[in-house]
Image 1 (cartoon, one colour):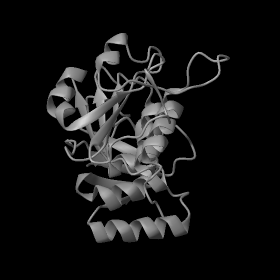
Image 2 (cartoon, helix red, strand yellow):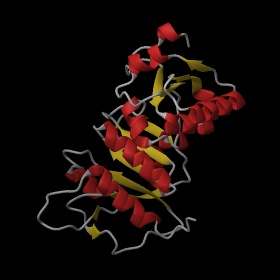
Image 3 (cartoon, one colour):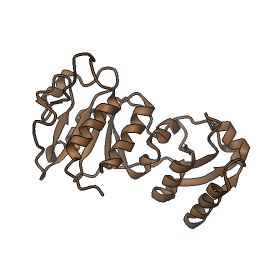
Image 4 (cartoon, one colour):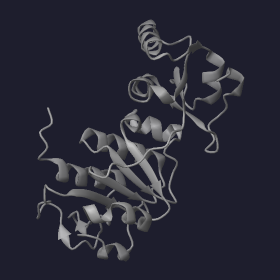
Length: 246
């Protein structure tokens, strides 16, 4: 991509950025086919510059030293490295476990949830629209590059997701009115699961009480609910704690 064509991120563009060294390394390692180029600021340390240049050379990705481009698009002065990539489409794996986010509205939460998913071995994330943009640089940065390890697929509504995947798995909507308390039951190991979470403001509506086995996370009455990324992390941990991670 020509330097003069690079602009501040806009959802309508067919490209996006990962800002910072670590997410850019993840882009190169996991999605090198989507990577267009890597821009390096003159203030980047020599060790990072040498390492990223070597990785890019192995992957056939152009490296450009250009302060102006980075300063034009970054939102923090500490960002000294920019990985530019083209957006790509993904499809969920029918045989694997899923996390389902219904109308997430915060880029930071979406990115943090991606990172948690990958950390506990879940590589498939369904997002029900309307929803925040997964390719926003804020989402990519919050994920710390975990986005490049995942399959993420958007659906117009939950029914569309359910038609494709509902018959082959058990759905667990997490709700304040959930009938079963998290930790009081075991998921059948022979079935895949879908852990379903509502958005930051409204959660899931009561219609989800009829979907699969509704679950609640017990907490004190001193709060009305948990933060979405925290609730998702608790749910993912409980459902994956028997996995033998190194």
